[in-house]
Length: 293
Image (cartoon, rainbow, N blue to C red; front, side, top):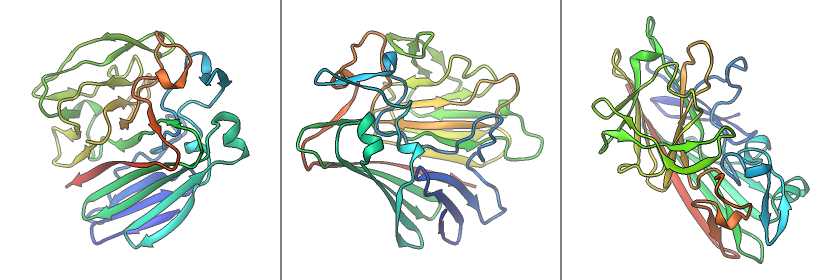
């Protein structure tokens, strides 16, 4: 575990998966990151790389050759190499190996750099194509933040707020959670999506048309806020496990790409939003999470 610390917060990141595992306040010890109860959901904030979501028929093709890869890619299930840069900054790097090449044919370097600045945690996703052919890739966050932070609160005291819109238009999915080309409509209350047990009954809410790329988890009973700014990411999802009991976290998920669609073929280059890097090319996609107390 790598620890970042300043006079306000302590951040913990696991070298396995380069996964954010804690964002704890020094003010009163409140832990804002979901603590991965395996009876509900065993992860905190997995890195989605080099794909996002499910694949149609669990496969994709590159120049006609088929590959199978685990849901959300292998980034969340491998150890990354840490590089400590300061007390408040650490980078984790993943490169190809025999295991990844069976699922993903390119040579790459993917670096996740965390920087703690005051009450904000910046997460930079730096991807480089080390191959001699164009490389298609996808990357995203899946950060789970706890709700019901204060005694006596219920999940229905919480909401996710979106600026600049009075309704969300999630993409409709089929029974396999593959995307269609149709959208639903969820009216907001003063820009807020209330959290209830039924909010995620159909899995994640996947959004491709947010006016402002910012989401805020808040409560009607306390002043604490978790704000995520994700201007570099064109897509966004909200998710929590659907159970027969109250689940006390909400995932904020900036995505570079949408999951697979039931209307698409298997060619990776045809996936909605898939990114391409030329040989030697690199790009950085960043989102920042800020805690307000």
